[in-house]
Amino acid sequence: MTGGMAAAAPTAHRAGLLSCHVCGRLSRPAAAPMASQCPRCGTGLHRRRPASLLRTWAFLFAAAVLYVPANVLPVMRSSSLFGAQDDTIWSGIVYLWLEGSWFLAVLVFVASIVVPLAKLLVLGTLAASAQAKSTAAPLLRARAYRVIEFVGRWSMLDIYVVTLLVGLVQLQSVAAIEAGPGALAFGAVVVLTMFASLSFDPRLIWDPVDAQVDTPANPPADGRRA
Amino acid sequence: MWACHDCDALQREVSLPSGGSARCWRCGALLCRACDDDDSAAVERTLALTLAAAVLFVVALAFPLVGLDMQGSHHSTTLGGAVATLWQQDSKLVATLVATTTMLLPSLELGAMLWLLLPLALGQRPAAGREVLRGLLAIRPWGMVEVFVLGVLVALVKLASIASVLPGVALWCFGGLIFLFAAAAASFDAHQTWHRLEVAR
Image (cartoon, rainbow over all chains, first blue to last red; front, side):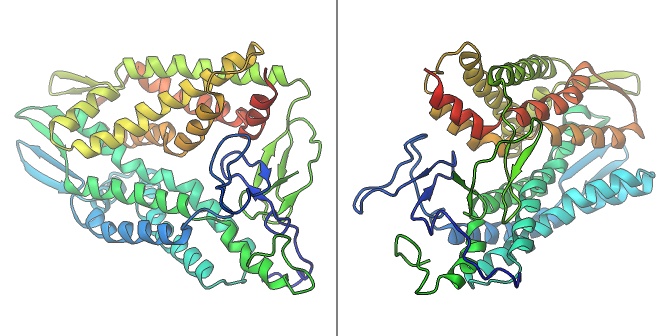
């Protein structure tokens, strides 16, 4: 927690303004019965993304459930004259390591194992702390969110590896590779965690911090609850 | 004046030195990059990068990605071919996911950028500009060309031990695309583009 943040930070909310989440333009909310619309890009305006935490939890939960089959089921099935072999994400990494491609083994390990797990844990922590209206370490949490948003897409790596191996190794009777059920589960985990991080509104990290300094002497301009 | 998209803190507009960027005073989020003194030069540079990326992308999709020499027979595949094989093997959802993130959305992304930049470079207002820009911003996180290229490299290393691998034309194109895509995306500043759309008549 940043101790020196006693002064109220000027925010769009405190100024009674809505910030468009698509184009960033600030505008005044429409009178009560009307839904506010951004005058520049036409997007519906909300103070915060609607049902942000609920959606984040839903996507996270679905991703966490699929995380198990994604890692346990084979993502790839290779058959050759010498028999068939199933490969999971993990056995693919071990294969690269034993081949001596340590750099790629570490790279795939980070992209396929560390990043999805980190996304689940970090987003879960962010959503839980926002729900509890925590004021602890907002800057650290804001940075964690940006890192998660940035690295999330790289988990798709293994799906592309499988796609290319399937496309190339099709020698009918001699050798063939096909995608396993784990590939679908794994792809779903990546997509669901991306949806989860897109649903999370990072401004929820800062709202409790702002509410703390919203004393009766210093209320938000539009008078609504913080 | 505008508010930080990450923490809602209000920001004072400042004039940036060229090549500079503005960050939120409270949470450090990147707000926007410097507007050039000469805005039409910035539009033209972005347009040039986008056009180059589009040409390279067409070549990358049309030509074989990798060839494989295995026990006397030669096999090669394009990205579309690999997706089609997945589809035929009944991994239809995975095939759809790959086709969407590596072919469909990157094409739409480049198309939308050209749609907006061509008229802007000619000093005209793009038709349906705000809808196209909104769509572009929505699909941006889902185009994964650079991740795909890394995937190709990993696949090549895996195959190198069992067969001789010949990188195809498309692989070099994809390699170049990583940089062109990144450069075009970096010089296409959403904040500035909204402003240009407002100003354009």
